[in-house]
Image (cartoon, rainbow, N blue to C red; front, side):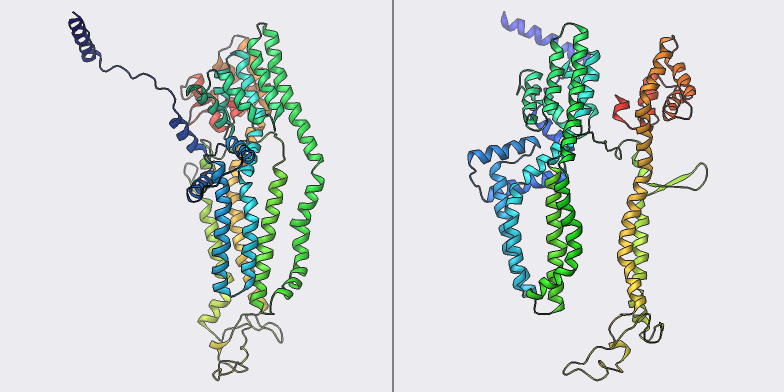
Length: 549
């Protein structure tokens, strides 16, 4: 009887599949692998390289870390989502400096035969050990500063959603969709922890995440708890009052923290100014005196000493001090990067109008390459002139010349005509003239000008779009007020857009609503499509997460 029943069920299943097709697969639960793939899309590249280096070092040399230090490292590792262990961090801080000390000292001594490089690489390796051990802390502070700059916006998005829908899961999802990296990664991690059943409720996952920020951003933690507590208020007025209170707490806290940080910047900035500005100027006088005690009077040796101390050691020290000062900066309001938004990427190219209807866009890198090539040719022109015509020169005054090639002094065993007065033009060295020196400056000026031109042309149009977007954000509250009045009068949204655009003609808000109104009337789009269409939507011309939300 049971077999007949099973056969009947199987018969009807086959008939249903034949008539209606295969059943739709059930929705799969979010797994940790999906979160890993998501994180790889948004994770900084240098973080991944550091992770690979730590894991490789741990496989070579696995060191045991004491409990207190391991807990400290793990706190920083968890904050910036590094896939490393405290043992890997310590292993890298030992293996890499030892490699640099041994390889750098041996190779440099074999090439230059100078004991200075052996001592230099030994000291450099010793200083790298504590620096590499603090790398997770620097990465965590960098992550913290970027995330802290978005915390005001995150509370704003949470409150914006919670005012009309009291649902914490949806509010966190809304904030994650509109925030930039890295805080959107943290918010999505909260949802992933619930989906993967690491925590049973969204409040438990959020509270576990807030514990990481309790040491640095207490105002953010308090504001988030106020948002959570609004879920338990049955009276609508008290619920909205708690949401407004959460915004006031984080805004006032951010202002106070930044004010205290600015007051305490005098001494660190004075030290940074002395190291980065005054010391390099004094170094032009002091370093030749220092190397006179280290070198044997050889100009080549003296140049190496000055280069290593002045161009390597000093910039590294100034950079380390600057990062240390910035690591103590509290959270504030950070501007979003709009350069990768849809509709903005093509603005990074230079538009060359060939006619009213045809415009070509050229990458500014090509202009920079042309500048470098031209300046290199001009800067090396004295060498080119002497190569093609050794007798070519232009008199410059009574005892000077434009190129001024000279004959080298004679050494023992030198052939006649290759040195001393009256040497052949092919044996002359130089150029040492004032004209050649001035032309050689174009080599450095050309490199600097090409970099400046590239970033100037690349960011010119993007800056204009950003400024227009800022103006729209400032005006948008009054524009929404007028739009609400038109809608309150019973006008359809399409007509209300045209009315507001006509009222605010000449302003950025008027241009915004004018684009939406043209999309509706001329392209036949619906209300939502006129605003959010990825190609011609009004939001595309004004890329702002605040306006989009």
